[in-house]
Image (cartoon, rainbow, N blue to C red; front, side, top):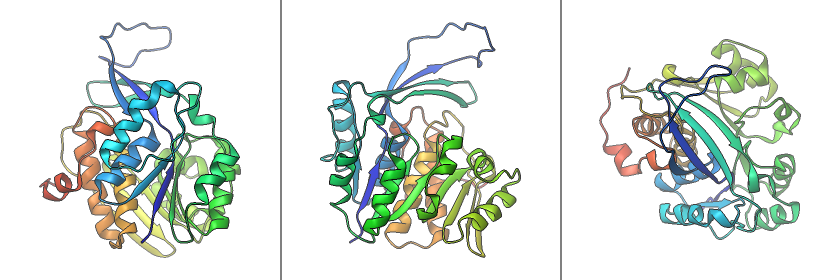
Length: 298
C-alpha cells in the first residue's frame, strides 16, 4: 500500500477581519484575532487525512506548537515524526476582507530549522513508489527532493509561496506540480494559463501539471493529455485554505487509484466547501461532507 509523507509547515494562524486592505501608511483598527491551526503543510495533511488516506506529517514546531500536533492527530494524521524542539512555532498574520480575499504574512520560525540528519531519518522510513508532498514553507527543500528521488518516491510539489529561488531547485525530480497562475507565471514567464501549462510541460516533460485558476477552475496537463474542471457556486467567506484543500484531495484521490477527472471533481468540490467557511484547516470538509454535498457548477 502506498504511503504518503508530507514534510511541511506547521503554523499558528492569526486571522484579522478587515473592512478593506490598508493602503501604504494607513492604520486600520481591528477586533481581536481569531486563532487557528494553519500552515500549508498542516492544511494539506488535514485535507489528505479527511480524504481518507494514510498520511504521515513531518516538520518542526516550538514548545508553543504542541496543540497543533494534537490538531493533526485528531484529524487522523500520523504525527510521530514531528519534532517539537524548535525555537518558535511558525505563524501567519492573515487579513480577510468582506469578500473573503486575504493578504498573508508568514514568519517561518521552526519550519526553517529542519536538519539534514532529521530528513534522512524520516525519508529512510519510506520506500520506492511512496509519495512525498512538499510546499515552499520549510528549509532544505533541495536536499529533501534529492533524498526522495534517491529513495524512488514520487514527488508532488506545491511551489507556494512562490519565490524566484524555486527556479534553482531540482524541479526535474518533481512528478506532479500543483500550482496557481501566479506561481506558474513566475516559473514560466508566461501570462495566459494555457501558455503556462504548455511551457511547464516543455520545461518538465515528465511531470503532470495541475494549474488552479481561481474562479476559472483548474487545468490539468500531462504531455498531450489535457483536462479541465470548473468551480461551484458557493458564498465566499475565506479563501485561505482553498488551494491546500484542493491539493490534499487531489493527491489523495490519485493515490487511491481514482482517475484524474474524478480527482479534479472531488478536489474542486472540497475546495469550494472550504471557501464557504471561516479559517484554514478548520474549514476543510471530510470525505463524507464532500461526496454528499450537492453544489451547482458555475
